[in-house]
Amino acid sequence: MSRIQKLRAQDLIHVDDGFINYLFELTEILSDDVNDPCHYPIIRVLLVLNEQYMVASATAVADPTPLPTPLTNRVVKCLSLYGTHYKTFGENLILLLNRETETSMQLLILKLLYLVFTTKATYEYFYTNDLHVLLDVIIRNLLDLPNELTSLRHTYLRVLFPLLAHTPLSQPPHYKKKEIQKVMKLLAGTGNTHFEAADETTLRLVDRVSKVKWLLEDANNAGEIARRSLGISLSPTDTASNISVADVAEVTEKPGVQTRSRKAESEAEFDISRTETSVWEPMRAPGPAYERGRDRERYRDREWKPTQEDSSESSSTTA
Image (cartoon, rainbow, N blue to C red; front, side, top):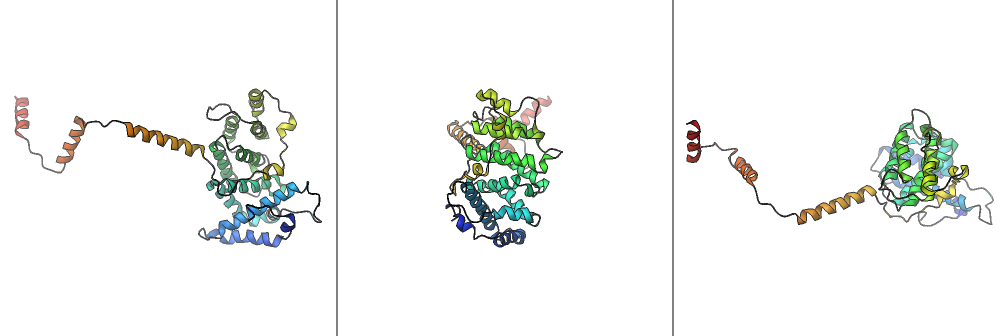
């Protein structure tokens, strides 16, 4: 129900710390049994509850009847206090993001990752090696998203900035620095004809990522790309990007909608073109090489005996 309906803040108040801790403990208990049918559904419950907390906090400002007690995101609270005991949950988040093709599930994972990387107490929740894997997945997905999926692309970029700026990835040796810079240039609309001109939000988010301290280049950064592409100059306020929880929380998709893949679509088009070519390709008559091959096949396991023609050729050659 929580995936298709917004819960009231009065309902979320009844979700206490003990219930959230129990769900996290279950993910650890079931971590050794990949076939347990409850393992990933429990993780999904935690992801959905986190989204409900984000939506509730984003709309609380406009609510004329504030709650008697502030609403706390108990999912993030639990990770902040006991994250070291629930490492399996984080590993499964990365695994799910790597495999997930449903857009709504990707968004649920990205929303929690955004809060983890923007909450100081959880900056170091993930192991560094896991962060490397996560960065690889994000880079791959950013390059694979079709041009039309702007909302999902924006969410990935919003998660990428705190991932690079706040986590252990900000410490040397810097992982995939050159690759990240190349991806930012591509997303800004330069260097590759397969990417359409970027919209202003994408350019602003790309500029924000490119200005992470350890990614800065001398002059050819995405801010300069934005200025050349759109004829605009991004002010410090714009490049800092007024990203808030509301920006991430408001991005939604219907359950069941599959994320389109640039790679899969291009491969499908290639297969179609090959099929059409093979249908119209004329049949060729077998040539001498084909006949020689048949002869070799026919006599491979037999004892070869010379014919009268072969004997005459042999005698003439000897003579």
